Image: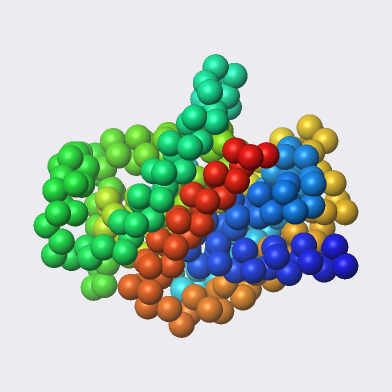
Length: 271
């Protein structure tokens, strides 16, 4: 019964995580620790292992739909890896409980911003003005097609990628929930492309993380197997549902995901 319950929960979280570009891990870890009494390192290791096949399946469908911006993803992922190493080191010198509370509030605020209008909202332009100006600096990635037009300064991709990595290293959570709203709000990337690109980046972080946790002995296959199966099923379900969503609806779902992510981080403080 426990096996089936974990499988169903993993499927639901992975389906939602696939749609919004988070992967689902940030929602699953507190459930495993609080609901199933797993040690935090085993929960993290099992979820990271499951993220790899789940994100791989999602990336396959997103590739067929031509939604992944590979150049943008790789450009953001390189500083993320570097930031993760720094974040892991900072865990030994910083008070993480205080940081987690501050960060949970920050994530919630970002989630709220996803519900605001973006095309003609002057107040939002003022809040993001400094980033808009920095995004004009060269060198940069630019993409212009019939439906998509955006620009990503290497200065900002390096800054935000490193920040996402540091946060991942500090709190043991993936950076997709941070990079997705950044790609949407700062770089003006369409939500569907941003979510697909974030999932693509999870392929690499989950692979390296899985290898590390395997060697550290953080995998309990009694729990990791249903999570892996659930994340794979959830990836198929999420990609099926994603076909029926508009960009506007997807952006609101990302906002809901951020609210939930903030709550999940607060739960981790209790652990």
